[in-house]
Structures are given as structure tokens and as C-alpha cells.
Length: 245
Ligand SMILES: Cc1cc2nc3c(=O)[nH]c(=O)nc-3n(C[C@H](O)[C@H](O)[C@H](O)COP(=O)(O)OP(=O)(O)OC[C@H]3O[C@@H](n4cnc5c(N)ncnc54)[C@H](O)[C@@H]3O)c2cc1C
Image (cartoon, rainbow, N blue to C red; front, side, top):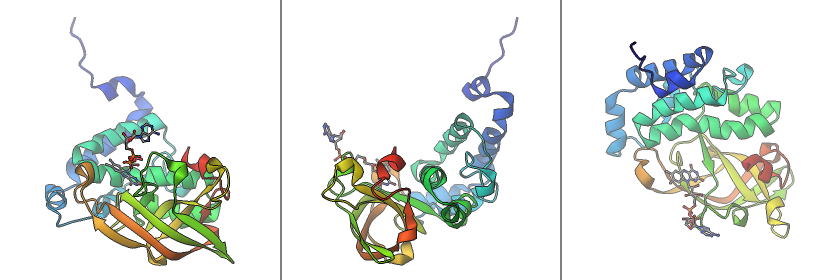
């Protein structure tokens, strides 16, 4: 009797879970020109935006999220199968592909409807390029020791500090930023999460190529008295513990 040869995902995914995986495979094969990868590799291009601009309109970004916010409501395993396919395009394009899912998770679970309309939907549609900023020059493992701080002033938070190793630093339209809002409090209840748009005054320093993230515009970002509208707080004040989890 002949044995059927199945790839891992053919074996693991149920029939109704295979559609997204197959679409992403086709996208990777047909929609990303080798020249883009070569140009990113040699530093001519320092952004993953070309990928999200192609993947968004095809409904491939943030596929786990509700349809009203640009997702497909597929399950985690189906999304992971797709993400694995993008891995062959290299670290930078893979980061660009998963960022809507990472930043989107915070928005989807903790954002208000207005925040989801303003950021989650256009991110999944490939119209906004997102990035996450949690690691600091002092280190990334000690999340609750963050020194980037946000002080309330009227309808704004005034943000000061630095983040490093941020994939997309060079070109992202907005950043999901974690900052200390209660420096004297219990460290686990001292940090809040914000959406900070680049044009609110984010400075970019030092673009570098972290662990193969060539062409991803990875770098250090600096906040000097950046005025962030209070409505850009994601989740509760001092509640980043839950968001980051
Ligand atoms: C490819 C890549 C992409 C990334 N993209 C992003 C991004 O988009 N946005 C972002 O914010 N960050 C990003 N990061 C950063 C990542 O989150 C950090 O590298 C990570 O949090 C670890 O922080 P660190 O590198 O500063 O190491 P450190 O925190 O300085 O740790 C260094 C070493 O010390 C060990 N260590 C630390 N504390 C202790 C302890 N208490 N006890 C014992 N050992 C300890 C760690 O395990 C590690 O081996 C990226 C990193 C990489 C490699």
C-alpha cells in the first residue's frame, strides 16, 4: 500500500483551516519581487512597508481579528501556519508581516472601538505601518524597570525616554509604546501602554541591522516631551501588565 506524503501543515490543519495558509504561500511565491529582498539586504530600502501594502489589500494581515476590523476571524494555528511561510522572505519582512498581529492584539483586546477604527482597521488593510517599542537601552528583559516615562498634563501625556531594537523605527506610522506612569508604584502596576504616532514628534536615531533584520529600518527611537493625546492610552492607566501579557 502506498503511503501518502503530507507536509506538516497539510497533516496538522483541518480542511477549513488550510485556505489562509495556501493564500499566504501563493503570496510569498508570487507577490514579493526578489529585487525588494536584495534592496533590503543591501540597505537601499529600510522599511517593510512594501510588503504590508501588498498583503493588506489581500486580507492577509491580522487575519485572526474580527472582520469589522479587517481580519478574517481565523484561529491562531491557521495564522501561525501562514506566518511560517513568510519566514522564507527573511527576518525583516517577517517582522513587518507579524507586526499587525502583535500591535493588533493589544488594540483588539484593550482598545476602544474608536482606537480600533483609527488604528487596527487601517493597519490590517495595509494602510498604516505599525511598530512596537518596549526594549530600552538599559535592556529589554526587565520590562517593569522601564525608564521611558509619561506624565499627565491636561488632555495629554508628555512622553520622555528612549527605546531601542525597534523594527520599523525608520518608517512606521505609529508605535505601541510602554512607558512608566507611576514611578513610585508597584513596578507591575506602574506602566501604561500608548499609541504614539510618528508625527507627534518621535525622533529616530541609529538605524542598525539587528540579528538579520536588514532593510527593516530597525533602530532607536527617542521621545523628548512628545505630546500624546490621553485618548491614545490603550487599556487602563498603569495597566500595561495586562496588555503586555
Ligand atoms: C530580531 C529582533 C527584533 C526585535 N524587535 C523588537 C521590536 O520591534 N521592538 C522592541 O521593543 N524590541 C525588539 N527586540 C528586542 C527584544 O525585545 C529584546 O532583545 C529582549 O527583550 C531582550 O532584551 P535585551 O536584548 O536588552 O537583553 P537584556 O535584557 O539586556 O538581557 C541580556 C541577557 O541577560 C539575561 N538576563 C536578563 N535579566 C536577567 C536576570 N534577571 N537573570 C538572569 N539573566 C538575565 C537575558 O536572558 C539575556 O540573555 C528585538 C530583538 C531582536 C533580536
